[in-house]
Image (cartoon, rainbow, N blue to C red; front, top):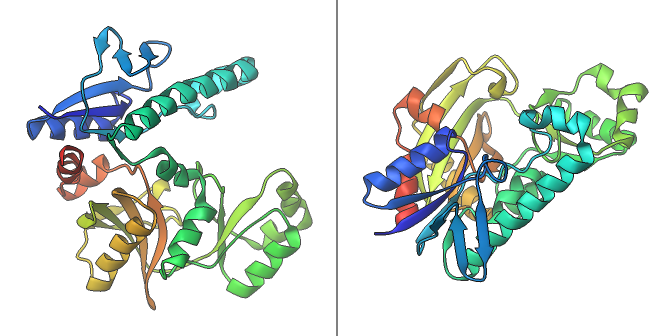
Length: 302
């Protein structure tokens, strides 16, 4: 029986559905509960022997890397971040060190990882990912990563309408308003650089690409600039040939065997906004009836 290691929280819908789909196809899903580790779950790693709790890790076909859950800024760590910030940062660092070493060791022994650690890192390396997409000849919004106020003002004059978001993700997209260009606001760039992008109008599309094929696509309607703050409708989308090809090419350019590709269907054709290396898909399955976990399980067992 082919075994798949699922790394994520046992309460995460995506991890749960991936494990269920693996079992439905005759495979074995082995859990590494990264939310519970290290406080409520044990991992022992010595040489080629790995134990999750008291059970030895069986030979694996693949790993579904949903999340390591090592972010010290996650809401669950709010109290520790205030009361013991240095201890929390050290704890997250050591947790990541063991989990990453485990995955890299298994990967170097021939186990497929969906998606590998370096690919998953694109979630917080947005400028790098945009460069990959541009080099592949794909249309992306004009963008600027900077901590220089004058560069921001020049960029906004050029693109007319702009948005901004953290370079490492973790917050929703916001529109650049006239007040944002004031000296007082832009002085905050001295603390951290920010990603600015041309605002692209159109219809938001989420396209799930699995093993080089479009598994499902949804059209998202929202009155919010960033639909994550409140989508009003999520429906199955019929993609044009160009949109489907763009989604496949984007996932390939970013090295993602599984991806949630965000496109904008604009008046001048589709534009790639982002490729998500570990996308949420449970809510899209629920709202559209589409099957994402099935093709994902087939990839993991293939």
